[in-house]
Length: 278
Image (cartoon, rainbow, N blue to C red):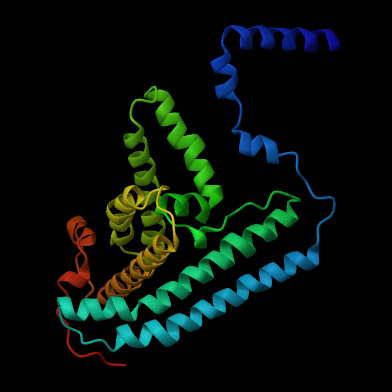
């Protein structure tokens, strides 16, 4: 048994000496191998219960935000085709609930949920996010908002794309990563809402890509942090406003015989409705 193991190790060493790229490419990323051996000694069940209760509290708070700030606004909105003025007012009225949902989603999932399961799995490395709120560039915000997803995309999408293209198409690799992330996010929302309305996809691919190059890592100073926060506020206002409009348009103007093109066409663009009735 020992002899066979030793021979396999020697063969592996010779292979590494001849083809070092094979060995390095077959190993997991450093950030995963370095943390895989870090385990806690005991499971703090009180800590787990506290985090799960905080998740439950965040869900109730999110429900309160939608009931008090979103549903009355969009249910009582003048039910005709939206013009520019009404859309701008809708977006600004949706900034507050949008930002509250952003904070609740961050706290409930990235902090409470992941820490609770990390504790139960005795996973000691809790670097699920960094200080994204201090970012002065969107490039740094993308790296620090969700470290788990960013590391996965970086090691298994971005680096593999560069390896296949021999590091000749870095902008194309970044575009590929943005596209995958945007498609997955939009798919999740489409499944949850029951309709396809690619607002988040367009924000990712248009403004997300643009801000990634405009607000890059060389931008320093508090003013760039203010610009980043302003962009986040407006972006989440747009998301809450347009998805809420489409949700109620789907309710008020259902399609009796839907075709594939009708399912792809946003209902809020053509829904002719009368006054809202509670």
